[in-house]
Amino acid sequence: MAAKNILVTGGTGYIGSHTVLQLLQEGFRVVAVDSLYNSSEVAINRVAELAGDAKKNLVFEQVDLRDREALNKVFASTKFDAVIHFAGLKAVGESVQRPLLYYNNNLIGTITLLEVMAAHGCKNFIFSSSATVYGWPKQVPCTEEFPLSAANVYGRTKLIIEDMCRDIHKSDSDWNIIFLRYFNPVGAHPSGEIGEDPRGIPNNLMPFVQQVAVGRRPALTVYGSDYSTKDGTGVRDYIHILDLADGHLAALKKLFQDKSIGCEVYNLGTGKGTSVLEMVAAFEKASGKKIPLIMADRRPGDAEIVYASTEKAEQELNWRAKYGIEEMCRDQWNWASKNPYGYEAAESES
Ligand code: NAD
Ligand code: UD1
Image (cartoon, rainbow, N blue to C red; front, side, top):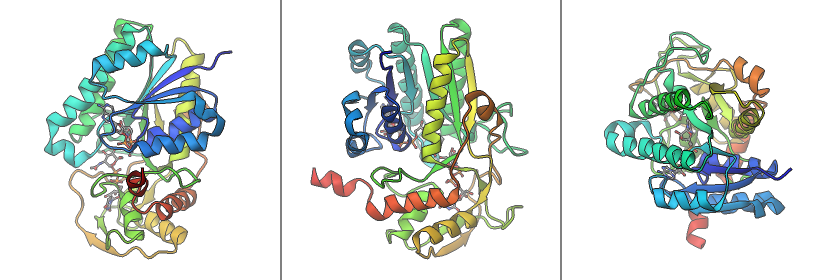
């Protein structure tokens, strides 16, 4: 059977790069597109190196999804069996300060992509949604049936895109669509060659912890220690990036096997809640570094406890997370200690 062609948007980003590598290792042919707005081409070059012989099945194109002409060219050169759509902006605080940037990039980028897909007869679509669509859940674990709400502009772009896809499927049942609602992806590929490299001051917990560990920042500010949780700090469902990438392979398999899947949604999480202090302790153990803490007020907009129900993905995708926080911290530290400034050093060499 001929290898299937997959278009990966946002392919040089954190989740995209790890997923592209796994796709190549599983025998898929991949075209990765990215505007490089929030990522480095070094990431995709490293993916190619890690893929060994399979690198012949990888093409990278620098394309902004809103550039319809460029996107049309990509679709004209390859007949895609499916698209995995990671490309988007994701900084919550920035989305509130610059809403038009987020609506423009995330919505127009996605609409253009869906239109070009339809024009070229490719109607298999996997979309990166987020646990943020559960807003402030009243109970845990979060099941896929929970009511949805947008806590910020970023979250609203996810909700709008989910709604848009549901409408597209209603109007044309040829579309097969899966939304994957990610919980908190952390860690890196065990080689330490690819990992998360946020631009500017990290918003998320583990990239910040990592930068403290390598000496780029003096201390971690812990946002809130008076929550009704085991130690008073916020609880989240951290998932190893390898498990998350693997979830996309499982979703792709489902799309190809179940032609009448329609428009479906799956949580990708571990089903376990870990507090900020537990995560810091695990990282200190993995790295042998002390992470100085500053206890502070709650971060506005934060939920107290969020973790996933993983039952649906286990039953229908035959997927479950394999790794725990020890492996997440070990692999994140391996990446951080080898690349304390992310891809920057490699960028300046090239
Ligand atoms: P990332 O920023 O590392 O990757 C996203 C990539 O998309 C970047 O490389 C960026 O340059 C690219 N991009 C943005 N706009 C584009 C456009 N118009 N055209 C082409 N490329 C564009 O982020 P990530 O963590 O890999 O996230 C991937 C997806 O998963 C995003 O949609 C994000 O919202 C979603 N998500 C991420 C998390 C998380 O914690 N990392 C959690 C839930 C959902
Ligand atoms: C954040 C986003 C959410 C997004 C998710 C995954 C906000 C309000 N929400 O959620 O939309 O889907 O990332 O990308 O930004 N923490 C600290 N100190 C820090 C950073 C975080 O104590 O410097 C705490 C937070 O209060 C929280 C936990 O660590 O309890 C995890 O935070 P974070 O990594 O930002 O993820 P989320 O809050 O789940």
